[in-house]
Length: 561
Image (cartoon, rainbow, N blue to C red):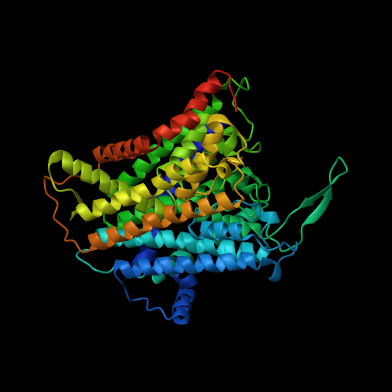
């Protein structure tokens, strides 16, 4: 009963706060007055003066996209060099060596693409300077990039016969200064108050009850934890991530971290509603996401509390967070995979087969069930365009969305955006299963071993960053394959999304008529859910059968891996 109450409270708080956050962000990106402008307005103006940005200048979609790609390229190069020169830079209290070239490439790509996959343990690999100047900064700007692309797409869908989509540099600045920074400051203080550490001190040595010496790592963790959650980044300061007591000390901090990693993504749905001047449109998308979240959570909880024939117990605690219990461990696993956040407070490798399948399937869908900050919204709009197109074909009418016709070009870009991460997940998994380098560091055999590889490339292609955890990936093969997957999974969607935004912006808005297919009612919600599940099911069901599904049936026969 206590677990059920906690789950209900979390979901109710999400429903209550999301519209408020969405309204605030709409004011930020529409350039209206809002509560944070008197506080950080001076900083925005100073950035524009230092960089020479004209806040009133707007651009077309190709120029906007060029800004996105150029900024992210610079980010990859800078973070790569920072790691390669780590030993010669300050704030390296533990005298850590330079990071290997292949791990540096993987980590640079990972944090710039908002994936935050970690083939390393942060406390014994990265110096305080690299953690702060490199990783934490990218946590802010990679999240800001996703928000900016989502806002550009919203403008393209809602503006009347326009050629411009705004300015990437202005949108990025505002997303960081007015949205991410204030929330991160508040969350940092709350986490420190709960016991998360924030210090520049050296690691300390302690003597255990057995008389052995233990080194306890420290560092400026709380500030990175705050933005890793809010920006749906997920890269932990410590290797244990949010299962570490210095990152996630109490049940209240656990609640805050789960809420933080979904609240901006949920709020952006209502930001879209304000731009479209339709609360019904926003609630239709929110309910679609919420229903899919509830279904996945229900399946995961049922699976985890069911009887495990291999272990002969019900409610398996192995690999779970003992401080928070099964329900909060499962909720965290679902929330972190429906958003593009790799933070974990339990070992996903220890989840029951069906619960692990839910986490994997959430990622495979493109994490559109709320999704990453920005990426979740533009991801589900891709599926909305597909649903509208299919509905139009069914009734023999040219499909429209928000009064604008959805034509051949938009559908080509839509299919491209859906295929990009799917190719990474299936093709790269097949390659890894077929070469010695891909199998050399596999811990488990059988379907569970296959699931470990499938999950890794799902995480890369879906820009999630979480892992089953038993697959060794700090080697040249996996670092380079995963880095390639993360780039394709991120920009293979952003490029067609920006093309769609530019194309839709130029179109006229057709007045609504009796023949208009409505996209703000329960019929559309059910159709959208069906399309998402059908596309996901047809694409990934065969792979699921080889992994978690067959493992589930074998587990019921008493066979483990």
